[in-house]
Image 1: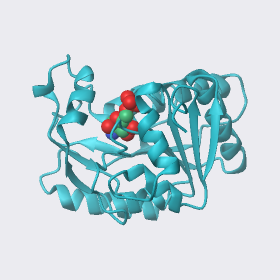
Image 2: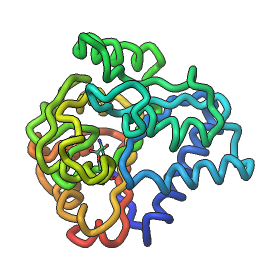
Image 3: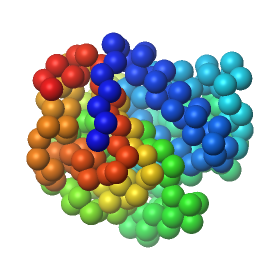
Length: 242
Ligand code: GLP
């Protein structure tokens, strides 16, 4: 695992956007896995800016989701599908046909999860997966105690994650879904390159456990230690307990 300490979130975003540009230069139709939350926004801003400045032709890039809420009405602005469309797919000018994600409103949720794992594999696998980290060390929506070999499946959010995400739902925890679909940790580890960005002091404990703690399902992000090409980019605040 490579750990890169940067000055701030903007610098982290620019660094990772640069890695995506390099990837697209080598492989124009690369499959880019994207995470939601506040942390990756500087990556997407920097990527769009670099692409608009002509750094690379991103028109063939393919985008895929890491996770999704279950049961939100179709088109809900806080569904991760709508979020990724708004933050990544549309700003890059990509058609929806180059964007894939799990169906959070499927009647048979497990069948939708299995179909998504199959779709990722038949798309050739994820080339670069961007990850954030929850305060409890979760990646995607793999909460503590998730199997390190898990595949895409339905999960129940713990209370802390629903509290953390209530800010996207008018600060009303009752609006935050209880259930989600997430790529499993095993699914995430299938990506060729994992890039985790963590910023701010609130992530310092989770980062220290991820990087320096034992590999444990209690800290799902520690599974990155098992990957042959994992990069953890942290700002000085998130690195403060390393
Ligand atoms: C959610 C997402 C994760 C994300 C996490 C942290 O739980 N499912 O993918 O990493 O939030 O979000 P933030 O970056 O806003 O702290």
